[in-house]
Amino acid sequence: MTISRTAAVLALVGAFAAASLAFGLTAGGSATGGGNNQLLRATLAPSVPADPAFHGITPGGVPWVVAGSSVRLTARGQLDVEIAGLVIPSLGTPGPVTSVSASLLCGPDATTTPAATTGTVPLSSSGDAEIEARLTLPATCLAPIVVVHPNGGVTHYIAITGWKS
Image 1 (cartoon, rainbow, N blue to C red):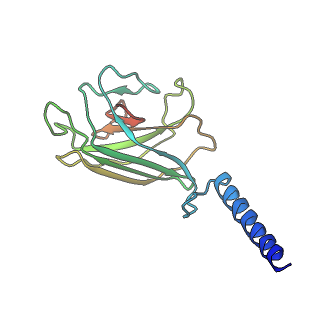
Image 2: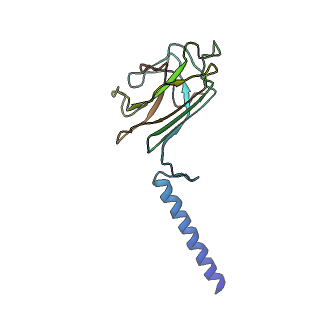
Image 3: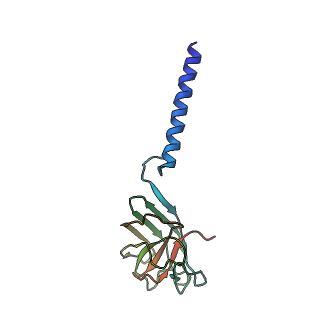
């Protein structure tokens, strides 16, 4: 009788844990905790001149490479973009680009106005930057894209959420 009661208690605890995890994941939580309600988590792909325009924003005029990156956007509008080694490969530096900003793009490509754009931050001579900004998010953002702009402009991008092999 004690074994079956212990088994029943363990089964109940297991079911509660599974239900809690499922609720946390469907409510935008994280399986690793923190409850920061991440809406977007991605890497950045460097642009090349042959890349397409997105929302009327065209790629930079020279090829770029990126050593590492991460993009995180939370439901509270916290955008964190970490960039390492974003450089023009023929130069080994970012060349004339000394600062970057980021824009959140939503919806179909016909929408040309960014949902939100950060201020500019310095880009080091080795292509490193960190953008931390609080954005005012729209109520709906289908197919979100984050683009990184050179020197505070918003007409070109030098990196975009995605990946390239």
